[in-house]
Amino acid sequence: MINLSKKQSVLLLTSIGLSVLSPSIFAKDQRTVVEPKTPQVCKVLLATGTDSTKTIQSALNSCAAGKAVQLASNKAIKSFTSGAITIPSNRSLIINSDVVLKASNNAKAFDNGTNTCGKLAKTGNGCNALITFEKASNSGIYGNGTIDGQGGAKIAGSNSSWWDLAAQAKNSPNKQNAPRLIQINSSNNITLHKVKMTNSPNFHVVFKQSNGLTAWGITIKTPGTARNTDGIDPISSQNVTVAHSNISTGDDNVAIKANPGAGASKNMSFLNNTFGAGHGMSIGSETTDGVYGIDVNGLIMNGTTNGLRIKSDQSASGIVSGVRYEHVTMTNVKKPVVIDTVYENKAGKTKALWSNIFYNDIKTTTAGAIVINGKNASKPIQAEFKGLNLAAGTTWNIVNANIKK
Image 1 (spheres, one colour):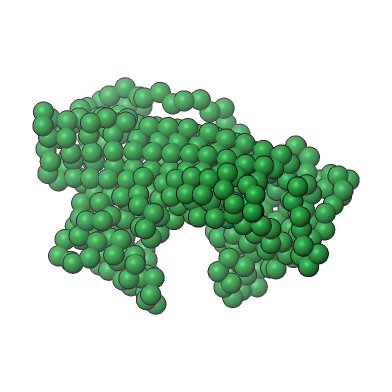
Image 2 (spheres, one colour):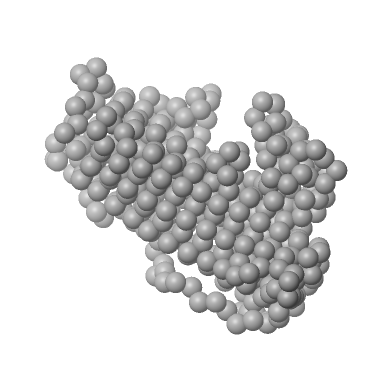
């Protein structure tokens, strides 16, 4: 039984009052998604241990449509080093299980012409990603191999690593310029299957203004101390499935965003995943263009700072509606549920309108704090909880919200 303080701004609604939370409101990935099959190989590249950027890019460009370039070990040599590469439409990359694709530690290998990659600058967009999908369709990365961003390695010609650069930016008016591991822009039906990603200098996977991402059985593992190393960030996109994956990072494990003017994020499924270190299963902080139809079903979280989190503030708030969390177990999570409309308390004129948020079969094995702060909401936040099994000592802090239990 949960005891709520009389001082909390809470209205416990009757079932009639929250009848809007009908199942028809809640959507998910509109595609029929099954475990992907690895495409046929067009060419096998053997590891050299040296820079292979041009070799990999040339093989991808010349590969027949629908096929893949395979990275394989060469006896004792099991690593490829690369700068920025682009995977074209209808082509894929296969990384064998004993192979590591390493990001170069030379900032010039990722600089996009601004001469700021590897430096602090007024803007933070000076680097290309290690792997980019640009207006690509039906492409992907497969195999049980590893992509290593070498975020902790010293940048060539510098005494700082990519992660050191991120730490320096935290206390600076300038921003870090570091490469992301995988950047997907304006693309359709992109697949990430079983690949392992580690030590990204910045975000691991960004899916921006795109339609159709399947991340199945992938592993993301980067230290919890590595700043700005989000796991998977769908941004103003739709039809996303992340399934049977394991994500540990130094920032949001997942962050669903709807950037101003970039379009809504909608119809996403997160199924049977496990999260370790990180800042949680997040929506925001940019929700300006709306987030709709998010289904999280079957999630184990151990050691994340936040659990199920929706965040924004006056600078970038919008509509969030039709979010369903079911069958979630959390251990050593400081804040199992967070709905925060004043996340960083930035200035602005936008207001949050968050409703139709549903929680079912949520279990915590260690005490934490449930925080629902609707201070910057245009109307009280609407949420429903069923099947709660919260550890003794769990606290509630609720402001401007209509909650049904």
